[in-house]
Image (cartoon, rainbow, N blue to C red; front, side, top):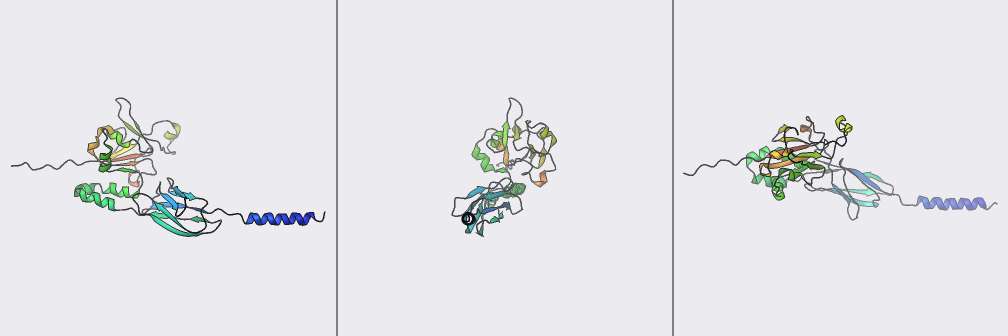
Length: 261
């Protein structure tokens, strides 16, 4: 009976030592924002030299588990932005917060401005500025021409978070699937349609007043699509944008030419 205690104690020491030497998981987490401090969704965050990568959520946050220890390089990449890289030293059991700020690439904007008329460039300055922030979906005149759409509503088909509702002779509706949870009218009727609102050339047009059918693709210069309150820029939030917002910029008519004499 005297041997039982030493044997048990020895087993406990061996077991405790094995438990203490078990590898401890390393976590890297954080968020990605643009230069204005707005969260960026869909940004790839990766640990260089490994298969570890993840896309940021709608709030711009990410979480990577089982990261290797030692000196590692963490990179955030998103189209239209310069990548941001951080180097951190990790030890077993570490939980490291790494924040990224992505700067927009202005070269694409410069190319468009060179080929545009000066008055058109000034009018669309807000469009290009918001496009560089990375929130929402943006269609340029070049994007519209590539789609070769016969109807304007076709430009919105395939955009995540939006449904195009066409019913016989009824006006086409653009309906968002990212409903806000706060308005009482949406909570009381969760299956009800949630039509998006419009701004056309800077003028608010409610879904009851305006339909995308009123414009042909040839009449549109650029489109901004914001699929819910979290994407809608601050300057548009004074209106009802719980169901999202479509900002449309129409094309300028060609300048009249002098008749030949």
